[in-house]
Image 1 (cartoon, helix red, strand yellow):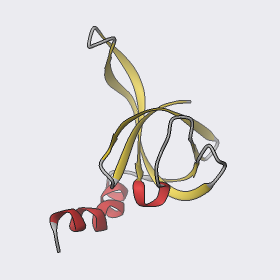
Image 2 (image 1 turned 180 degrees about the horizontal axis):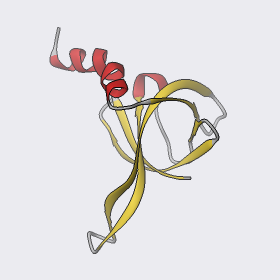
Image 3 (image 1 turned 90 degrees about the vertical axis):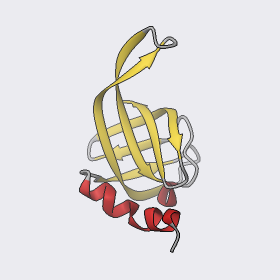
Image 4 (image 1 turned 180 degrees about the vertical axis):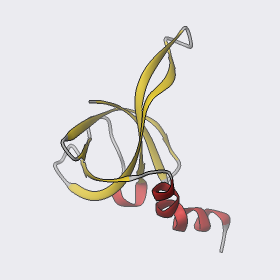
Length: 101
């Protein structure tokens, strides 16, 4: 088994250990899928070319569940709705995004 295969096969377990919660991912085309998400609130993010710091909410989603994630897609967690504002990273296993909501 390769390193990448090992990481991909254990991503769901790792996210669960990090406090992932159940959610519904909804794409702009209205396709929805049940998955899990790790929510990090009040993360310091550099903006304006590093001139200032802004607090943001960051979500981490499983790429195998969501497929390609785009700006404008949504994540529903209980009564809370997050709208994806920016894709921070996508390594093909976990997609990290900045959200509004």
